[in-house]
Image (cartoon, rainbow over all chains, first blue to last red; front, top):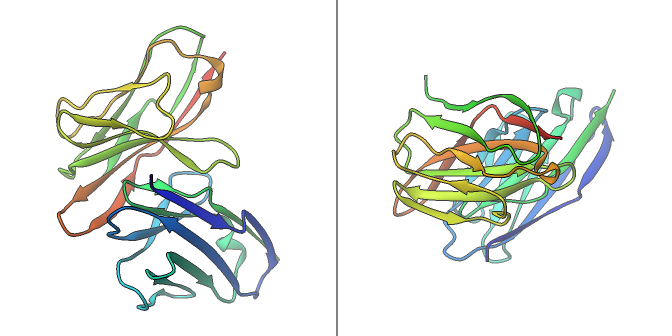
Length: 106
Length: 115
């Protein structure tokens, strides 16, 4: 059975801080891991990771996958209040973790 | 415009009154799935479909039915809704290949209240 565990479940930081969100998974026949951002509406796509060790970057956000240890991290540098959201990761038949609720204070 | 469309966006209903939430995608995606989202529990999968006439249970299928008669549509049916099915529901679709999973697209969500 596919399973995704995210940590921490919630996080409060101040603007300018750097955060690291964790996603560990168990899945049969791994193909990809997806990261999403959700701000009180439908989730929006951030990254898809398929290979270990290759960092994906988009502005202040970056993510990397470790297929041997079965986890991924999402880094956000120089956080802004607009980064406040729930961050979700998913694998396999689109099984999601519980999400990490990030709150960035001014 | 590529999109997943859910209807209705908001629904208040009474216990036991059958309802259907529709989901339609215009991207010719093979894979579609339904989720419910409750505070602190993330997105929990209700049912998914790999293609037309192929559906399977997710993690929380009790009290729900689905059908996939056409590729573009994947309705969620609550035969006899109960208050514990009050939740925010999302439909998603993705292209399915032999080698990798792809980005999933989400509908706008349906907020259902059962009283």
